[in-house]
Length: 258
Image (cartoon, rainbow, N blue to C red; front, side):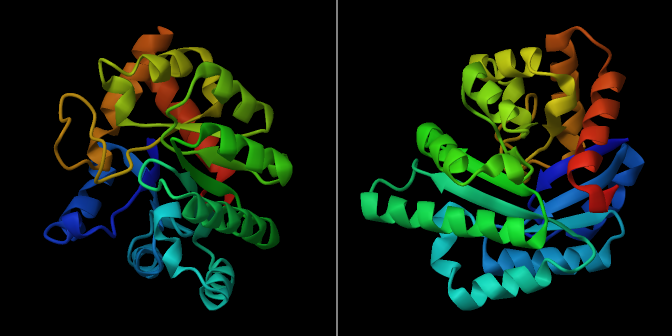
C-alpha cells in the first residue's frame, strides 16, 4: 500500500468531488495521506479532513509565499493545534524566491522559516520544507539553526545530487513526486536513481504537478503509481520494493501516522 506524504485536498480544485475521490483512494492502494497546510485557512481545513477520514493525517504550517498570515497569535494557534493526535508535522514551511524578488520580503521569509522550525522543535514534530530557487539560503539557514536536530523532508526536491547529499547528511528525507516522470527532469532523475531508497518519500503535491501521462491535469494521489514506477525504472528494481520502502520511510518520519 502506498503512503501519500504530501497533498493539498483542502484546495478548491477538489470542491466538486473531494468526498468521492478521497473515499476511492483505499481501493486504489493508497493507505495513508498527509494533507499539508499552507495558509491558516488551509490548516483549519486540514484539521477538518483529519477528523473526517481515518486515513488522513495533517501537517500545519504557513508556506513562505503566505507568511502574511503569520502573527504571534497565529503562531501560538498552530503550536496549540500541533497537540492534536493526527497532526504529524509542521509544514509546509521554507523559502520561495521564485515569486519573491524583494530582499526585504525574502528576509521576512527567512525569519518565519526559522520561527516555524523552532515551533517544530518545541512541538516535537518533523518538518515539511518547501525550497524553490533558494537552494543556498535554505541549506545555510538550516545549518545555522542545527536542523539536524529536527527531522523532516525536503518536499518536491528540485536541486542537484550534491545538494541532496547535503540534506541527507543532516538526516533529511527527499520528497519525490510527478516531476521525476518529466523527460527534462534530468537532475531529479539522477537524485532518484542514486540516493538511498530508504530516504525517499512518495508525494504528489496534489492538485499540482501531475506526472506523465497526466501532466497538465489536476493531480491526485491516484497518480502515485506513475511516480513509483519511474523510480523503480531508474533504479532497476521492482515497483513493489519502491512502494514498500517509501511507505516504511514515511511511517518512520511521521511516526504518529504509523
